[in-house]
Length: 182
Image (cartoon, rainbow, N blue to C red; front, side, top):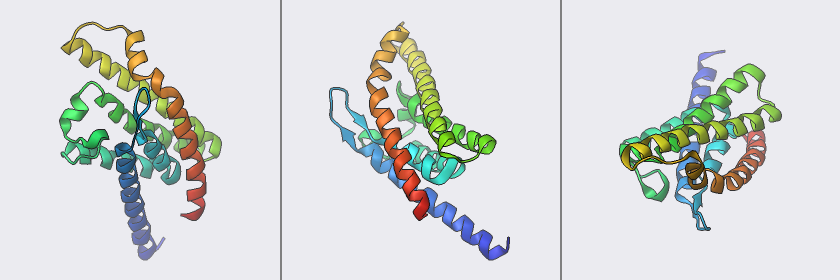
């Protein structure tokens, strides 16, 4: 590979990573007011992973989290700062990074087929739920008192499973179309 091609490739990588970081931010600001309101944040995360692949998708997620840590209001509800991550539900935001890492690892091991992508998205969501729930339980128990796993799952996971499955399906479909264009 010549130097011009390598520079052009890195420039595209940075540009696509930046664009999908912005998409994740915008999706985290969009709130759907149902019985349990939810954002399109998961859609943005999995659209980045699906379109950019595990490596660049993980980079977009990491930049998103770093912007939030720096205090820029990129998280849901236009919030930012380290306090958001250190709060009860901050583990779910950090769990997004694990979702990207899982996709990156699965691509490295099994390639970038549609089957691998949808499996890595589902597994990434599961790991995000597990990490976020463990984080929530630890902080809630430390600050408020003992809480059962059933209660935490009914608050933090069960209401979001169907919307998250729909968001993954939409992100998967969109990313297949975007990969053809990009």
